[in-house]
Image (cartoon, rainbow, N blue to C red; front, side, top):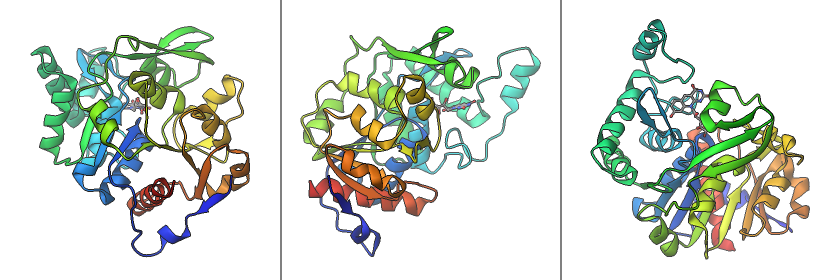
Length: 319
Ligand code: FO1
């Protein structure tokens, strides 16, 4: 397919064709594009649906890494170095837990711990994750809608050469070292989409799949949503055969697939109306069986996020 030239959107104010947008996001990469979209779209026109397959209970707290990453990023509270956790963080609680012989492999800062403690308290009182997320967004000044994919627990399990591992055990504790053989999303069969998810999709003009890990960040959301009857545009998280962050490229290799933007497009093949890949991968564009936009997809600055968001919105609007 011929790539759409992105130059127009990179000069002056691009005119945005699509208005109501749903973005499907995992952690850091997804949060960056969501932030770019939030810089352009008014709150009523953007809903971000976030993966909760990475959620887990740790130190007695209910922790939602991707939801928090998206919310902190939209609120301007995220740690710019890691992409996850809070900016200007202190680590006294974790240091003292460590002194007492407790687990310290999952880096939880003091401000972040407040989020998990308060979330856990509310959920023990019977509030849903959707309610808690809405209240936290309000408190943090996040105006766009952020929804967990489901209020029921879905847990991503990584099948490896060392057996099945809980996601954060594989990802953080084991530094993604075990060889991946597959994935399982425990609870996905019975998990309903969270309140507002179906409605947001039904009233959206396009669904954007953010540059998140297809296997462990986006697939759980797609499995919960099941049907999408709207144009879908995905942005490749793989640039020049590598991921900006995280183990997606390693996972592709271990599953016997060469990691590339083409592999990502093939992963979403049945869903796509359009696919966005980086300029370094422009030679792959002809091999992709849907319309493509070739543009800069690296989001190093806030301006990069907004520019990519504008380009993706214009591309989606042109389909
Ligand atoms: N990722 C790490 O690689 N190491 C950590 O210690 C870590 C702590 C952490 C704490 C809170 C949070 O919201 C996210 C955190 N992450 C950490 C990121 C997280 O594990 C992953 O980025 C996602 O689950 C994958 O999208």
